[in-house]
Amino acid sequence: MNSTIDFTPANFNASDLARQDRPFLIVLQPNGDLNHTSSYNFQKMLETALEKVLDSVVVDLLWVNATDSKGISALVAGIERAANLGKSISFQSMDRCTRAAMDAELDRQREIRFGPWNDIFEADLERFLGNPFVN
Image (tube, rainbow, N blue to C red; front, side, top):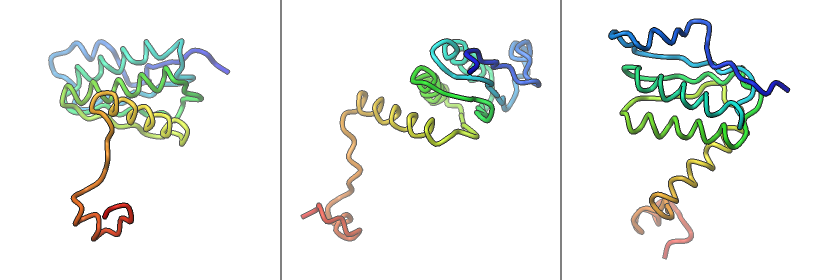
């Protein structure tokens, strides 16, 4: 298993980010494992792309072999940074395990920041929807 990851897609030139005419969209295509040894560099590349892009960043995970907890944290940090900057971020070709781990981490972060999150509406609407747990 490859323990290094190449973050630079063939059409990505870091010097383009320094130009005044910023790109509308940037696509990042990491290659290899997104793990404890590579996640820091990936997160920095993702944050740089988010800061420089006008609208959105697409992260294509097709060539990522494996993702550990540090890799998940880097992806979640990207989501948070995009939200803070008012930019859009999307992930393509994400495998089920990575998606489940990322959803769990997002839920954990949300609960840390905002407390328990109950997706329950007003009692009348819950009764209408057939929720058996509402009196």
